[in-house]
Amino acid sequence: MRILVLKTKRFEAMAAAVGMLWAVGLRAELSDLRITEVDPSSGRVEVTHAGATAFTTASSLPLCHRFNYFTSIPANTTFGPGESKVFVVSGLNPTDSDIWLYRDANFLSAASIITGMKYGPAANIGRSALASSVGLWPGGTAFVPVPAAGRTLRAINLAATRTTNWFAGDEDFGSFTPPEIRVTGLTSDPASVFLEFTSPLPASVHRIERRTTFSVLDDWMETPLSVSNTAPGRFNVMIPISTQPHEFFRIKVP
Image 1 (cartoon, rainbow, N blue to C red):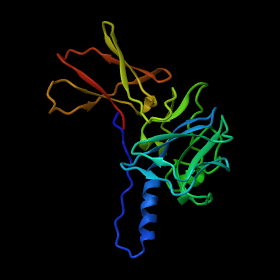
Image 2: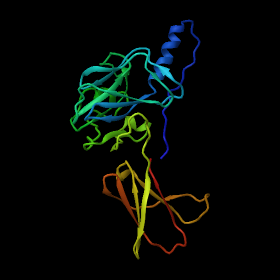
Image 3: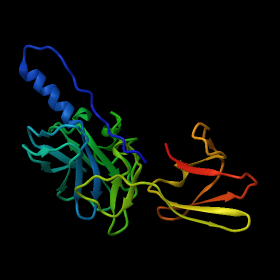
Image 4: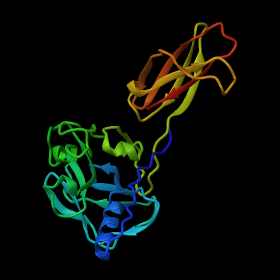
């Protein structure tokens, strides 16, 4: 799985007011921040800087959840390129809550939300609908399932922070490392081969592609093989044995 880094376009403009140029640059840097891991039980929230250059926050950045505004990223906090920092959010509900990072204290403005997510099934909690109005979340009723005890919610990649494609996994606070799909086994019987793999994604998004030659010039073709979910995060694909001298398969996701 390739890491996708979202980078906000830098603006260049001629202006007499230096303060105007500074403000535009600041907004571009703040929009590179992403919430990438959440532990509802302890209130720990990881924020990752997706930008290529370091920057320092000019003012405090509030972390809002269900209309609680008591935790902020302090002013003068420096993020290096790709750096993740962990903050403990006061009073985070362990079973159903939203969590959003704001650029300022204008909590009724969707334009002030930088990043966030919603876990737990209750609809329209906190600022979920507000965030969805500017494409930061799929909708007011969208949510990520609450993780089991001892696990955290982790973004699959930086693009997935704006979707419900998060997964419950072992904690990895302080260093954003997106999970990968890994083949873990290959067994067979007289009629079939069974491919086993692990993945943080739902079964429905995996696609199996096939080709029958060694040549890298030949196209991979999608094949209608069914992916079965055998356990949380574990999958199985049954591949019928054919008469072809060679067959190659790969797992593809969007």
